[in-house]
Picture (spheres, rainbow, N blue to C red):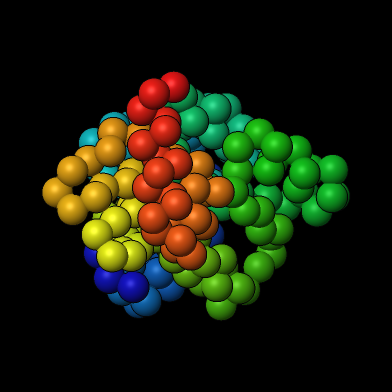
Length: 183
């Protein structure tokens, strides 16, 4: 896991530093903030892939911070809290957190949550290469549902039922696509 940046936000310096040291030893770059206000300042200056955010903090708590983050960015958030009630966990997830971890927690458990979130970040930030299906002189881009015949772009985005036809019966499918031009 290299080149990832995690922002750790917690008012307890021991927790903040402990998480930071552990993640740095795992090859992750870490920024720390003692409250939501500092966290927002860092997010406005730095590219961050994941936020580990305590709920109960002075000045600006984790819930308010989550709302402010979600106004501008869609960065995964793991909420940390001493609140162990399932209602609190559900509330945190409903308010915008992507994951939830109850204090006290082990660093290995936290690391597993971090790795899972960063895998999702990696999947969503990698450019998608077009997946093409070719049959004879017909080509279908599965992601965009665009159909081409040789160098001619049919100009239509087609439904999956037509894509199925292309895979199994290219001639009939092209006739169906040509019929779309007259609609």
